[in-house]
Length: 156
Image (cartoon, rainbow, N blue to C red):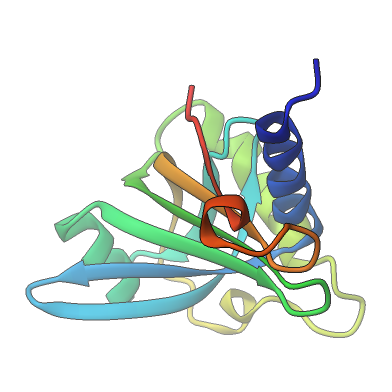
């Protein structure tokens, strides 16, 4: 049976797969930081990013692994907001596969490469964002009213 929540889950995953860039928000030592990042996603809303270990972003997410992640589609107004816990999985077996997927995303533009490819690559880290809360909003096709517009997607 295809419930409204099932459709919302499918639409939210579809949005995440259609896009390649989201905003990662971190907080550390009283400072807030937002970074545009390239990412990949799996069927359980796990987000994977590649970053340099000598960045403010990496320092913030290792100091305080509670993060937020947002993707927005301006063409068909929809957004996905996610909160979760970030973890460096660079040394895990899964990291090599995720790194390949992330390089595919970084190299998917035929004219330009992802910004990380232009930086001094000292050492990279594959970061896994395990979601604890996901909210989907479809501003284009949902009926008016906050109770119909926002859908919290259960995390398995």
